[in-house]
Every structure is written in C-alpha cells, then in structure tokens.
Length: 294
Image (cartoon, rainbow, N blue to C red; front, side):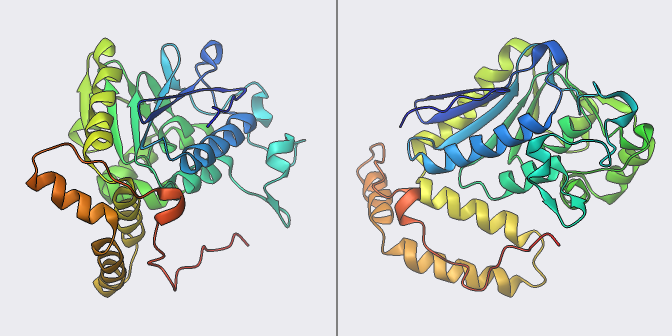
C-alpha cells in the first residue's frame, strides 16, 4: 500500500509500525486546521492498511505540539472571524465543531493501538490530543499544560471526558483551573504518562513497546480489545461489556487466529495470525450508534 503524504505531518510505515510526526518545527508543531485534517486522514490511512499494526505519534524538533497556532493574534479562537476551509467543512448549523475534538474522536475510533512519544512541550491541544492515545511515553524534557483558562477559553478536544478517566477528577480540575505548565515528572506521578525517558531513548523505547504488540498479538484481537476498553469506559452497567465480550469471544474462538494462537504456543514458535482487521473484524456492537453532533 502506497504511503500518503501530508502538509503538516511526516508519515512512515516500517515493519508493522506507522510513525506519525507532527512536522511544523519552526512553529513548535502548533496546531492548525490543516493539521487537524491531516491527522484525521492519517488515522484513516492506518486503519485501512493491514500492514500497520501499531501507531506511534511524536513531534519534529524540540516540541511535541505547542498548542493552537496563535498567528491570528486575539482572533485565534474567534469563530466569527473568517475560517479555514478545513474548519468550514466541520460546521453544523451555526456551530463550528472543535478541531481538536474532531481529531480525538477519530483517535477514539482507531482500530490500531496508539503510542504517544511526547518529545517536548505539549500544551493546549498539544496535550488534549494525547488523551485518546492508548499509552503515552515522555521525554524527561517534556512539559505539559492545560492552559485554556489562561487564554480566556475552556478545555476542548473532548478532554472533559478523557482527562478525568486518566488522572481522576481532582487532578483534572487542578490542572485545568490553574492552567499551569508542569514538568514530565508530575505527568508521570499523576498518571498522565506511562514512563519517562532520556530524549535520545524516547523513540527507541516507543518502538520497542510497539514491537512487542506487533510481534506477538493478533491485530483483530487488538482492535476488538481497544474498542472494548474505550467504549466501556462510559458504559452504564457491566452487562454492556458482557454482551460485547460474549459476541467477541464466540467469533474469535472459531477464528483462524485462535487456532494459530494456541498452535504457536504449544509448538513454541512465533505466531503468524491469518486474520485481517480490514476484512475479519466481527460486529460485536449491534446496538452501537455513533452519536451525532447537533
């Protein structure tokens, strides 16, 4: 499958791992409407490509993402000002959908596991876009900040749903109320990131974790697992999980992947899973409907 190209991202697939690099280093990878659209299309590409079994996201240069591009000055967040075409396309009635939220909702729907390699400053949308990533690893030089109240706006990118689930309500409120920028160690201590690494070790560590997924697990099983865990984070009762689990295990139990998983274990060899996400993902959500924006 040919690899797509993007205006604001670098995109590379090697040995089952797609690496998406935010690539506006002269602007500290500041977020724009074009980057929003590029990220959505990049996740469309990773989902469609069976060669991709894990995704890593990082930033070019010294920052991960310094938040929204403030090039428009005081009008940066004013939706009554002329909007980029990419933002106009997301208008519903008289409301412009938040661009960060369009990205995080696309990540939420990803069929491939997402690892964030947070290499530097990550503030505003630069931190909220990380929240639907499955695992976040950070450089010891990274900094984080939910700075919205200090810019006269509010948290976005559906972070009011994601953030308390990751770090608890008290920490989420403190970080958003104060808007302060905090160091990588605090992000680790409070559960925002999984581990800290010297800058030169960050990407190798992220690739090693991705490699463990790629080399040992069935992609269809991983896709189902991702849906189960994320969708059930907001379920009203564990019965919702039981219904989906039951459908999934019945389908997977009769699959070629399950046969290969057991056979390779008994034969003490590396597995070669035959099923593909693009064609063999079972529908375990007959009652699931994507909520509409209205």
